[in-house]
Length: 346
Image (cartoon, rainbow, N blue to C red):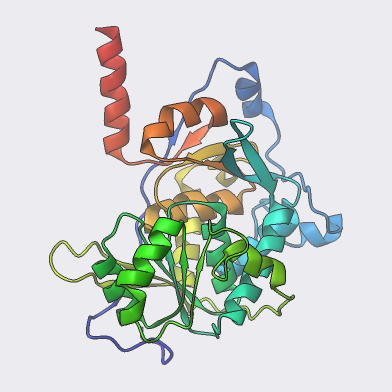
């Protein structure tokens, strides 16, 4: 179905339901703790800073989180699982992953929403992001949803000409870039050709620069939420363009929420799909619907945590540091692991 606020473009956009792939739960039997988890009650143990009564009202009779949009999923999860660890980021100083909890993430979402408002973003506007997985990516997505804006994710590895096409086709109002390299390439080869853009920030820019995301976060004032409906557009995800120019795929909140609900039916007890004690290593891109739906939003809906992988070359090191109990991946990676183990055996 088409919404009046959707941008009319030269390319036909399809409103589709994404499909869910299977996940592989790692059998880490070296730890008795992992084995004992099987016998722990699946009732939700609320770590909320809100009252127990408030937290309990946010779950159903099966102790599953209630939500009807991605915005309410994020907001409710951050209340119910406030003290649970959520995102882990590798620190060059400590050589370890450092974690933020759900409550801290919720505060950052509010600040990012204020940053977007300061950039001129209004309801139904599009916000572009060129970034690999990081907490800022998730916070930007959640901030967009909480103000009825739409996220347009792109990849750092894409060519500037692809960024230019996607930003123009979607008529993005604001653009967030991950690194100084991405920012400068975008400013030189993309931004001058995108008249709809009103502001561009960089996550990793030095604090004293006028395009610093962290500085904008510090200046941001509190802002009011503008919660979406299930039919509002959440994400505009573009195809790779291998058969022509990239095509925008419209995903409403209902598209993503129904998939999060649907994957719970993969197991007899829905609370066993992902547990609060589970942890993943996030290396599949959240810019793709599989990684975003099955890992990011499913994990949040169940109070789990995820370490954010530094990149493919660091996967083995990050696996040892994060010690995930659950992985979301594609067959290619599992084939590499399988072949690698067989090579060592031989």
